[in-house]
Length: 210
Image (cartoon, rainbow, N blue to C red):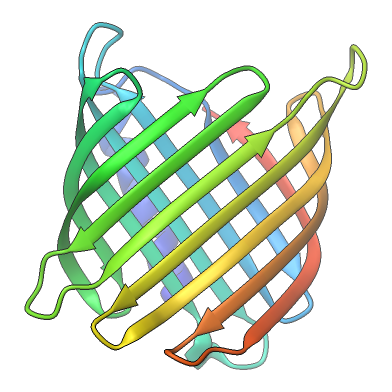
């Protein structure tokens, strides 16, 4: 049921924004591990080449094979203003199993041919606010004319007044051939104020679609 809702939300988002925002590759990743699978989609685009305003969407879904109660999803829809090159103020909404929350934060993003970095601290605006910092580091140097090395680390630290709520470090190591990335996936997840590390190892495939 959760996965079906997420699919419809993704489709609705793409339809609503297809004409309003210039076309840009949208990276979609599917990872299949020994405990759960995950889908990760990111959309990031200024409204025009000269505009400081833009839209950021991130959709992360985890689906467990044996216990559906552990399934989770997180959607971020943020409008941002890039007031200094690569540095933004962003605000919007976050949707998860806990419901909708208004949110605001900063984003530092740099994207080059080989290296990409995103550092995004954020706060949910509620009676008992929660905070998180998301970090993405990606490096894909060329091995030869056809093949690139693909490495990526995505980390999240979510915490509130009682300490850690959820943290993870998702690591990817593989190759890129003809715009498709694939390889080994390793996820480390920590839940609660006194967490133990849960591991999920498997494979991933990633493609930039339009």
